[in-house]
Image (cartoon, rainbow, N blue to C red; front, side):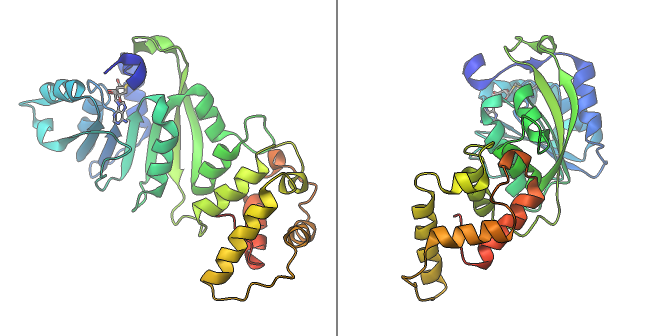
Length: 285
Ligand code: SAM
């Protein structure tokens, strides 16, 4: 295990650790998931407030240190440590997730939390500053991206605070930020792969028109293939006369989206466009 590869930058400022845990507004009945507890600087503060904590830690030496830290204390029976990779681990039930994890797993972490069922009430997560800013970006701003749209489709994300490098040991190269992710429950009834598939097309050049991005190389053949699959799965005849380009342009014109740009479209605009495509059997996954 190596500091850079596993992002083992320990949060050494107890005030910052305290604030992160307070932002979760824990109830005494809460079951908490912590990803990458390290030596347990956040864990011990969570244990003071929650009913139970499951911590997933990949480095057995870190897990051993955390075990030692609670040994013989009343908190010991409130803590379970899973030694392993969060990305592959089976997750238990949890109400809240609190994590300062290595930034390499930022994307898998957030999407795994959002696809977990039942949905957590809230997640307080520390990320590299640039990633955090993309999570909270609004449409029309320079950081609005496919990531922003995908996450905001399923959650309300708020920026909580900046955490400078010097709060960690060893100090990382990048700046950090803490965000609150509150999943929308129930989630919108749309398959992630569909919404993301549309996003891949529209955000491939976010300042290009929607029409322009649909005309990019490979897009029409892909949608044609999806359409054939959809027809056979729903036992419909595949009409050879269907011209996918014409069908796409019809949807874009009817919804008034042809000249829009993803850079300026919000989650609602994207969803409406997706539903309009679905109505005529055009699918993105
Ligand atoms: N949470 C602690 C803190 O704030 O002081 C430690 C933070 S350190 C940035 C990240 C921790 O995550 C390390 O202990 C590292 O071993 C662990 N880790 C790295 N990759 C992991 C993974 N895929 N699954 C679980 N833990 C991981």
